[in-house]
Amino acid sequence: MTASAPTQPALASRFDPPDPEFAARVRASFGRQKAMALIGATLSAVAPGRCEIELPFRDELTQQKGYVHGGIIGMIADSACGYAAYTLMPADASLVTVEYKINILAPGLGRLVARGEVIRPGRTLSITRGEVYAESAGRSILCAAMQQTLMMLPDTPDTPE
Image (cartoon, rainbow, N blue to C red; front, side, top):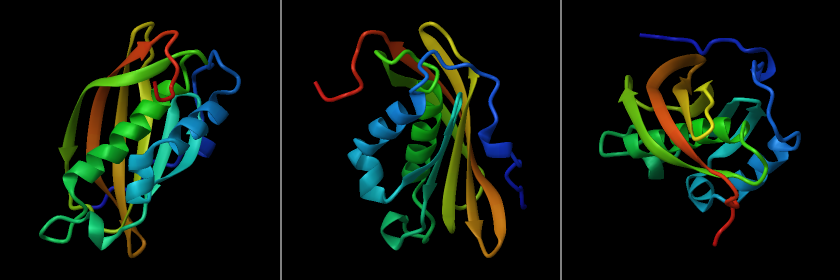
C-alpha cells in the first residue's frame, strides 16, 4: 500500500494571513518547543494555512516492534496542524489544541514528514487536517491521517508565562 504525498508548489495557499510576519513568528515559536528539539524534529516549510515538519528516523523513538511510536507520530502531526492554524492568527494571539483524531494507517518506518493544513479558519475555533508520510527506500507511504480542532487565545502571548 503506497501513497505518494501530493505534489504542492512551495506549499501554495488560498489564505491571506492577518500578520505579514507570520512565518518568522511560527519559526520563533517552533524554536521554543523543547519537545520538538528532544525528538529531533525540524520545521521544513511554512506558508499561509500550511506547515510541514520533518523527523529523521531514530531507534530511540520506536516502540517494541521497531516502528516510530504512535505518540511521536501524533506529536508531529499535532504540531504541523497547529502551526498551520497559527499562520492565520493575529500576531498577538496564541492557540491550543482542543481535540484531534488520528488514524495510524501504516507503520512509521523511515523519515517522517508531517503536513498540516487549515480546512477552515475561525474567529475562535479552527479546523485542520494533517497527514504523516513515512519515507524510506525511495517510497513515501501515508502512515497517519489527522483531523484537529484548535482554539485561538486572543491577546495571549505564545511565550512562557
